[in-house]
Image 1 (cartoon, one colour):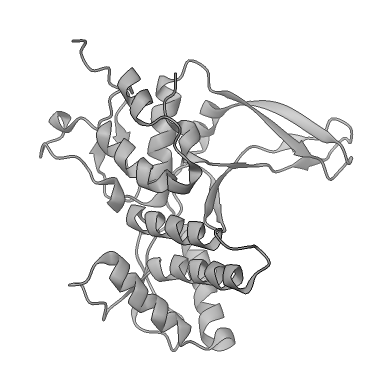
Image 2 (cartoon, helix red, strand yellow):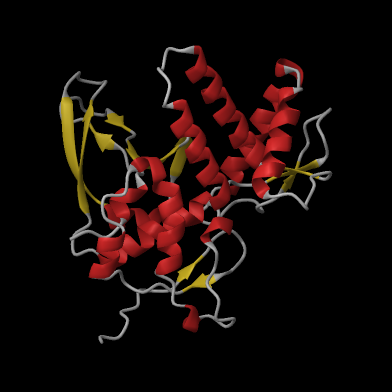
Length: 272
């Protein structure tokens, strides 16, 4: 049996200083994680980041639970493994240019995004400042939240997009994103994370839209900017997107476009 091939150690950037040791994926991993649908990405990411850990390299001999990692660290870990183990990490992006009304394409070296990995500008917990809101804290999304939000997105998409059912499910998904980003002092810690989020979701439903919820949503958005760590990303309607370097329009001097690259986690699993 061949010895495990290790990749450079991975350090979580959420302030935990947790160091994780990953082995390189094998053909067996390619087989186990083949044809992962986008509808179950988050669940599989948890399993993948667990399976590739080498617990003997850790002081306590236990793996670090990816369900507890921030969405930023989960994404970065997947990217980290991919970049370290692929022979080629060049991708092609195509987009419609608003400057010259033509379609452009460019090749980009994904590993170049490593230069933009950053620490957060703020701790992973900030006290809620919005008036007339329960006392508590704003926190980033973590793995267990991402898995539930993925389920909510799948439920939403089981309805026609122009239907009332879709609109309500979409609103619920957005509210749960906020609910998972909050921790109230009176949360019942005896309940599961999902049960606590449901209680916070139900509390958000009681708020007045303009004078309570909107100011809170603005505070949450700003906190997420301050807490962001890892790769440059944006979270839009339940999906993560990489913010890639701007591309200059070849037809109009001085014009450029900032491009987003949807980060579909299943694209970063090993394949043969």
